[in-house]
Image 1 (spheres, one colour):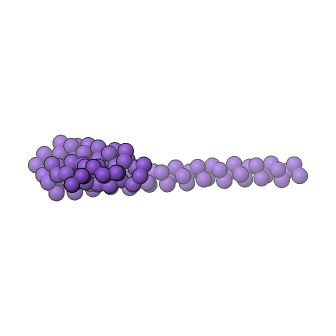
Image 2 (tube, one colour; image 1 turned 180 degrees about the vertical axis):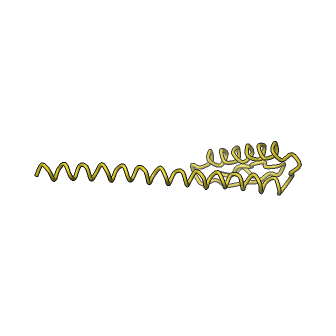
Image 3 (cartoon, rainbow, N blue to C red; image 1 turned 30 degrees about the vertical axis):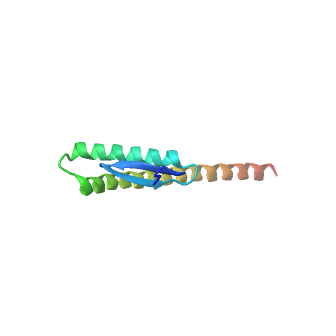
Length: 101
């Protein structure tokens, strides 16, 4: 059986191989995600050397999820701030146009 069909990548995580099919054009994203997970696992293992298997995987995944939530929160704050700046600029332009008319 050929495990390397189009878009399917074999990713090894904690000694287990996983055949994962990436959507067309997303193969590099899959590989980058695997590298990110492996880095998170290594970091978590350094902090908690006695953890193994599922417990290590779950803690690493929870840490990644926490980071994602924090990034989404910061991104939303940035978007809100930019929206306020755009609104203030539009108001200034509208007042300037109104004064000229």
